[in-house]
Image (cartoon, rainbow, N blue to C red; front, top):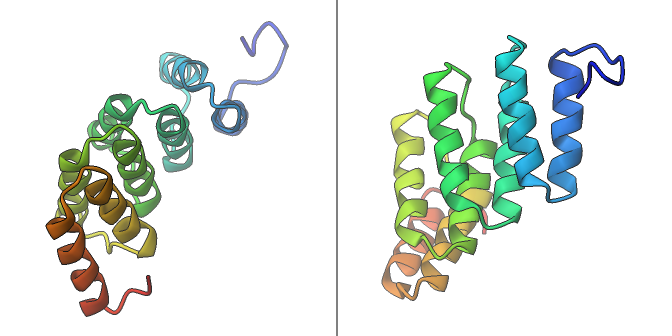
Length: 149
């Protein structure tokens, strides 16, 4: 795509194109650009993956978002709270509260500190899934960890 437009293919140009797809809720195009990026041997980044995960989340493609969090680990791309938060948000939209809680637990295993967005995404997923007890438990954990709601 970029070669046809005579644009240099690098991390910055791919990330900008993926970010545009994310803003336009074009998750398939964002994913295709990520694939093209790896096939072109252009270095991927946390920011690039986060944008694709977010694009998937906006379109309720929670399974793709989860896969991408796994691909980040496989490709040795640093996973951060933004990636987990975006994936958890997509799980909430897709009524996959169990997966959201798995991501919440995985963050601790990755030594990532859950922030306000993380807690709220997990609580929202549980609320939407009708598991109020878990939502209340997460709320108390959030307050116990002195995370502002």
